[in-house]
Image 1: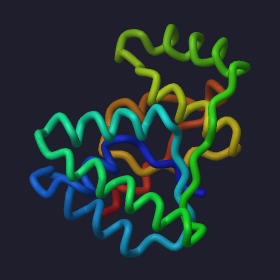
Image 2: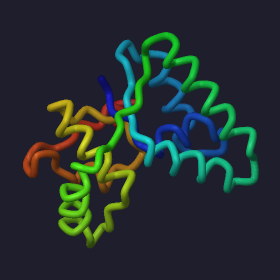
Image 3: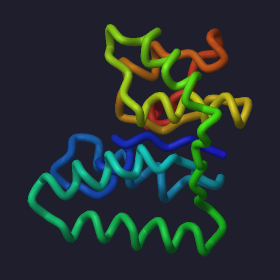
Image 4: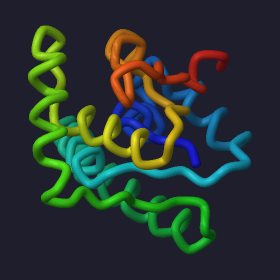
Length: 143
């Protein structure tokens, strides 16, 4: 499974985004299921709808439903047991700062036991470590 960050969803749907073509290319070539978290989806929907186009938010939800029906997308659910680790991560990376969406993806990588991600955020996911020492591998970089 490949972890998906907010910037990817935004870049995929916003044609004005610098990463739009790269994000579309990745999706067309992707052969593996994608996974994300509700904090990431909340952030992506907020950013898309803040751009003044509520339709883009609905397009994202329709795309996710289609991908889920095809078995190529799922959502990882955070549990109350994750709160101490989220707090620890947000304190550890306070200088960036790390937000809840990013912390949820670190938790997800720790759950999966791997950190392959697609993200337009080169700085943060280059810095974050899952299980405190494993780097993320951003699969969007080669595109």
